[in-house]
Length: 158
Image (cartoon, rainbow, N blue to C red; front, side):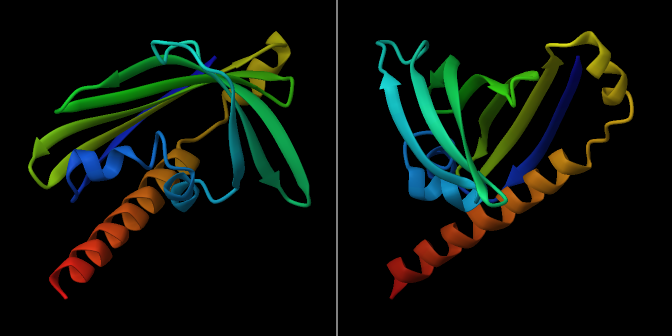
């Protein structure tokens, strides 16, 4: 099992950032450009337990995953969603996106990823894994979300 946990500060309000992680597929595609579509296949109340079918572009192939929401918090100053899915029938993946309001226009974004191979032999390859992909994701998400926020502010001023 390999676990990564990284954080970055976003120069946007928490409510603005939240829709990039839950609820708005067009916003989600801004930080996850390979996501093609999402469809709720089992809705639960509360949201924990909901299952979403996500289509994901991987080269010329569209892959589909069933994502189960394992944790969901939507409070004014803290928001989180944890998802679980099976990647390529090899890895049990758990991803968590947490947002913590720091000020009116600053939000801490914490990303956690846990990759657990179904086959113990695959654990050996995880020893050589780096956090480069995680750091790149955080930086790209920051750029996209902050750019959209600035554009919204400019359009509001005009």
